Length: 366
Image (cartoon, rainbow, N blue to C red):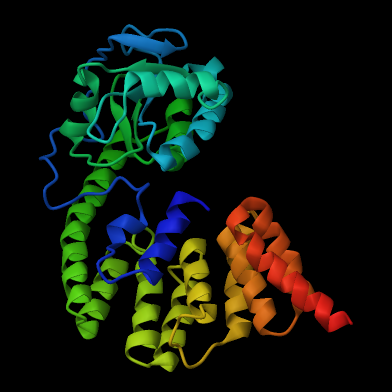
């Protein structure tokens, strides 16, 4: 299961103290205690100071005429590891056009060490097909992360041929801007303006997430719904998990199934049309045996699952498992087994479910 989807499901099914921040561990989130921002898109990149290069050709400085993509990572960070192959693909794609990708890591309070990074590179040499630097004194890490007010990783910093920062954010979202920077067609002024708006939204979102957590803890369901709506209005893509949480509250806590289905159908036809994780989470809520939902629209759950599965490329075990559950609840054991096999191939802990479906199918065929 991907780190992102794991936390979406966790937020939906574990406890009221789980906040939407956890649901997006991979997103560069802001919090109310985030440091002040002194570095933003449009600013000159700080000097590159690296004590040790663990892989690739050492880079002495950000040279004019080159494009640099610096990705801050740690060995314990699942989303960082997941993003690494894509960064390698970008390095290979644009290397002849002057791109230099740098993985930057340093000691932290969560156990990241130089030895851990070296071991990871030795065990999986194909994981990071680009230069990797160990920032012993956190000089460059602080000059980027702290100055930019970033509090979570992975965090990518794209530097154009003139030494200006053109992108700050999740490495999975850099492709479009990178293509423009490589071609020299990027509008730095517009990128700067867009980033400042997004940064302000992150700060506002952090405050709203705290309100949400407090309301959830108090079981103030009207308050939860109000804050969820505010977060979705602020950034429906970033806070898409709120759509699933709102559905959960409506159908579980307020026994308002009609309102819940009306809301998610409108949301997934509009701002959430590409949010496969939220779709999967809503579908899971509909078929979850532990849910108190009184109206289980299995046809709609299957529609959401199939859409989510297509968007995820058929590679997410929980989505496949949920499809299997829908078919099982519809009485189609053959389809249930078909998708359970795909899910179990990706997640071994789903094998018992597969075996149960197989046993029931065999019994039915007697």
